[in-house]
Structures are given as C-alpha cells and as structure tokens.
Image 1 (cartoon, rainbow, N blue to C red):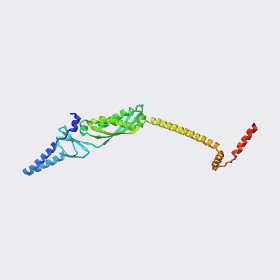
Image 2 (cartoon, one colour; image 1 turned 120 degrees about the vertical axis):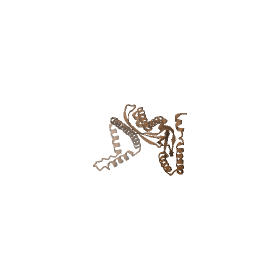
Image 3 (cartoon, rainbow, N blue to C red; image 1 turned 135 degrees about the horizontal axis):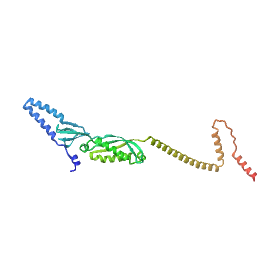
Image 4 (cartoon, one colour; image 1 turned 90 degrees about the vertical axis):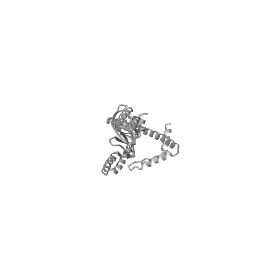
Length: 285
C-alpha cells in the first residue's frame, strides 16, 4: 500500500479508552476493599484523567503517536490518550495567512524590483503535515519565496505590472503542486507591493507624460479636422442661401457688442461692397 494512502486511512486505536475504563473499574472495586486504597487510587485516577483527556475543537485534529509510532488522527471532540506512552500533536485546519518577505528580483528585461506577497493556505491532511515535513509553515514560506523569485524573474516589467493576477496565479499553481505531498492546500497567493528603483520611476513618469502629450496632440488634430469640415459645410450653406452672409454678419456684430471695451464699428451692407466690386471690374474692362 502506498505510504500516503496508509497515513490517510489509518485510524487511531481504542486502547486509551479501554485503559481509562479499566482504571475506573479498579477504583470502584477498591472502594469495597479498603477506604484508604480507594482514596489513593481515586486521587491517582483524577490525575490520570487530567493528563489523558483532551478536548479538540471542530477546526483542529490531533496526530497520535504511541511509543513514537504514528497511530492515526483523532478529533474533534473528546480525545483520550495514555500519558507517557502516547503523545498528541495538534494541527489547526483553518485557513492561515503567511507573509512573503520582500524579495529582490531581476525581471526578464533586467530591471531590479522588490516584490512581496501573502499566501493563504490550509492543512488538508494533518498526518502528512506532521510526518512528511519538519515544519510545514516554514517550508511553505520558503517554497513561496523561491517560486516567487523564479516566476517574477521570467517575466518583463510591463508584464509584471499589467498581469499581476496572472503572475500570482502561476506562483500559486507551482507552490500548490510542491506542497500537495505535505497535505497543504494553497488556496490563494496575492502580490501585495512591487517596488521599483527611483530612476525607473522617473523614466516611467517621462514615458507616461509623453504618451499623454501624444494623445492630446492626436485629439486636438482630430478636433480641428472635424471643425474644418463643419466650417466648410457651414460656409457652403451660407453662400447658397440668400441673405445668409448678412445674417451671419449681424450675429457676429451682436457677439462683439457684448464686450464692454470701447470699439468703433463701421457697418457696410454686403450688397454695397458687391456693387462696388462689380463697378470696379467694369471700369477695368
């Protein structure tokens, strides 16, 4: 049988409960033999119960060892062990958070950055978490740190900044595969902060400013193009409409007259200018 399946399927023996019941029967029988013997055994029995009986909440399990050998997983609820002969290692099954210390990483395009994050994990198999690794918390932290450096080192800076969630998902996938044999499930990994060098921050600021100026020039040129097209349409409409230019002139005069500064206006009918232009052309001929 595979060792991992053996760990998961093995159940703790009922020997501690049998020993406790046998001890209780001995104490009851001693009451009919001698009063002094009864109180002595009763005192020892109380001390035994205090050392042997444990209560594990719903979110915890106990890995039981008998004379140093793995004897199954117990809990939750009332758990009885044999003091000195047996020992209990309690494991919490709730989701825990683990901070990834800031890591100095050189990206694929040779930019040095500092990246930190947080790991959300839980224990699925308490037996594997205790028997397969010395300290599963420290081991998970070490794997998360090294995997973060490897994955971030394989992407460029723009990809890291734009696809942070995808990079974190790739780190979670790799770490989860490595910790699966320890009975650890990596539920999520998030990249919290990406710190850039000061010179890179200035270069990115200049790049962003140039990009915005480029957009502004393009938008302004497009606006002028649309305005020119509309002006051409308006001029065509005014020239083809009798009296249209006169109305436009009067509207312009009305707009100018709103200015409180002192001005002198000379208003000439457009027809007068047209007749003068025609007379001049005749005189030249």
